[in-house]
Length: 324
Ligand code: ACO
Figure (spheres, rainbow, N blue to C red):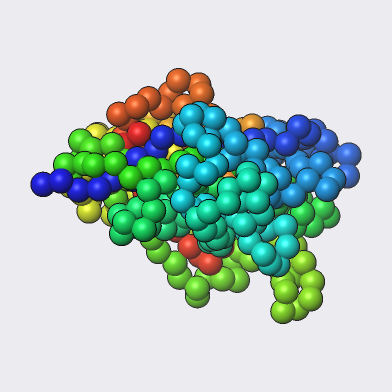
């Protein structure tokens, strides 16, 4: 049987220049480097410069992904950009990236599923390829969460960072078997009943920007269970088991969630890509950032089976299994 696959042909990322170590929060908050490190695994994060927007970060990550693929902007048919912190209410950050890249054809749109945004974007891009609508899609996760932090709330503002990651998916022929390169399986979920445990208390309809609010313990409680379940469901759909997985690339929110999920999946931490110590939680950008770092560091190689999983506000969560 022949079938079409959405295969990764390029990956890249961009992090703003300003690196903020945990110790910087000690001056203004009742917190410590030791607390932040031990409760979250975070040691530092990057913050965008004044005036630097999500589409700026996204464009830089996009250029890096195009360079790694040896492609030009006009080789792309579409851009799918995952973000909850777009520059403006509209137009989409994706169309801003399209213009910045000088891409004159195709189409571009944003996806909003908070920290699960990149998994949702990947699923959408895969569906566009499998339905024959596009040959090549640029999939970006980009955020400036520093813009929605309440700097007086120590339980949230020390956890998040800014950044962007991107990959390019290309339609290629496959056999339909798990030995194919490309996206092999997708599982998406949401449950709006939990919207009050993680949200921003402002928005267009309320004519405010608002700040991120989180009941950390509650989110934590849902996270490990739901992340392991969605990763297992995505693997079960294609008859794959965790011993066939080379790398888990999880949403980077908290090292204890990452460890707990890996344990539930029966995977040693040696097979998990971890960047939370350097990036903090960059929401929809965290998985493409970790994928790019994982490739650059020589961890993820062509042919490896990679499982990505994420959960965020909504709650929205999901997983994608792909062969790199
Ligand atoms: N420094 C010092 N103490 C702090 C800090 C801080 N920065 N923040 C909170 N504390 C205090 C609390 O006030 C509390 O004090 P109390 O016992 O006197 O009330 C104490 O530390 C313990 O707080 P907990 O909430 O019990 O700490 P916990 O171990 O649960 O860790 C954390 C908190 C890191 C937020 C954790 O719950 C977590 O990671 N939750 C999940 C976050 C997540 O995964 N988000 C993903 C989605 S993000 C998205 O979608 C945008």
